Amino acid sequence: MKLAYFGFPHIGGTYSVFRHLHAGLAPAGIDLRWLGHGPAAHGAAGSPAFRAERDRGTVVGRPGDDEKAGARATIEAIEGGGFDGVFVNVCADRVQTNCARYLSPRILRVMIVHNITPGTYAAARSIRDHVHATVAVSDRIRADLVSHHGFDAGRTEVIPNGIEAAGMVRGDRRGAGGRPRLLYLGRIEDQAKGVLWLPRILREVPEPVTLTVAGDGPDLARLKQGCDGLGGRIRFRGAVAPEAVGALLAEHDMLIMPSRFEGFPVTMVEAMTAGCVPVASLIRGVTDMAIRDGWNGRLFPVGDVKAAARAVTELAQDPAALARMSERASQSARDLFGVDLMARRYRDLLDRLAGARPAVAAPLDLARWSFPAGLRDGFRTYLPTPVKNGLRMLRERYA
Image 1 (spheres, rainbow, N blue to C red):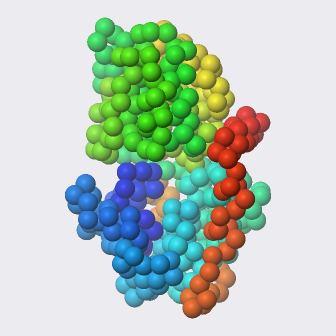
Image 2 (cartoon, helix red, strand yellow):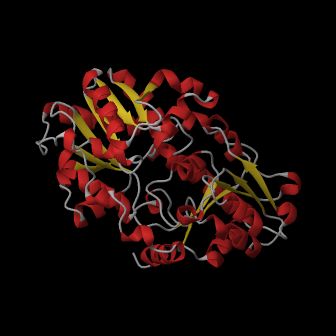
Image 3 (cartoon, helix red, strand yellow):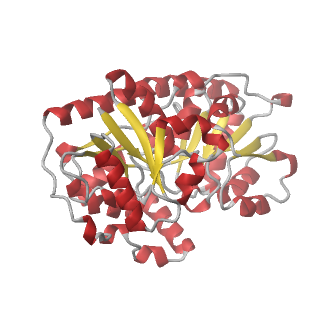
């Protein structure tokens, strides 16, 4: 069986899922290939940083193609390239997401929903009737899709993102002078990740706790500006290659994750596997899938800076409790979120679909290419960012 995975090489969660699935499905005779289009995909394919990924997929079309031309190139590559099916990552690329509505009936389509935002759900709903199965990466996503967006419970299942435990090593986490070390690892972006809360959290935590910020993103300059006066208590590491993540986690005691919203954060589970204790926003049906507050990590209400700082301080001041939590975090993550388990769940899903493929809506005519409402900008797009952030925080506080 040959399957396409909509996306292209990049440092991020959806491509990490591809890498793990590529390896995990191969023993079952399933050849999974990434398939990208557009300027960013062409750029990634030509980047030395992703040289090793080039033989696992391909870019179609030309960098300057318009959306309809990109869709045509994508569909022709699937239908003429010997592919039996495709994984559609909702909202990763709106053209590729929409392609699900135009594919030949013989092409198997599995939608993967990675986030809990209204925009993601609207996009998923717009192609719901054109896919054979939907994978939610967390309990929250499945519950929302089934309860509020008309998804068939029998065709919607939870498969959490998996991690490669072999790359996560446990090490001596205390730095010079035994100072507890806190880590933020991920995209430096405030709207989803809440990074501009980090300086406020650190200021509430007594010395000698230090914070390492690893990653890059659009709000890096704003974050650095907000760190004035913190001196040597905070350092910026820059972007981290996937192969270096395990060693970085092994150097730190705790991971701080102040996100406003997540689908299922791979970084959190990677940290747990390495014994780096997570201190994370409580996002119902997402972060509490992996973290039991006070047992293998700490959870705090979204946006509650003082509660986050209090959790970090309590762990930093109780090394014995931190060590116990580190052991539990590592064991629970390895037991519940290993990449082998994720791959087996996808193999089981594909086996079931091969035996009994449910009916889907008839394909649309590519000559009449258009985007449904769920893939067009909605009114939320035009709300000021502070308003959207406030609404997201309230939603999670009262979920």
